Length: 55
Image (tube, one colour):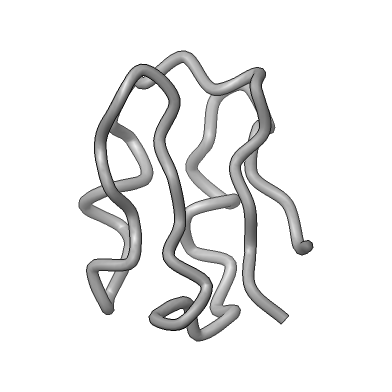
């Protein structure tokens, strides 16, 4: 099950460097590519606004 980023995302960039497979792309609200996400949760652990959660 992939993680998703909600509309609460502030595009701070904290999650990008934590993703070991490069599944997160930048934008007004960041997105996680579900085909690349390995469900490790590293991005969710560093999100300061808790905008990342399992789908």
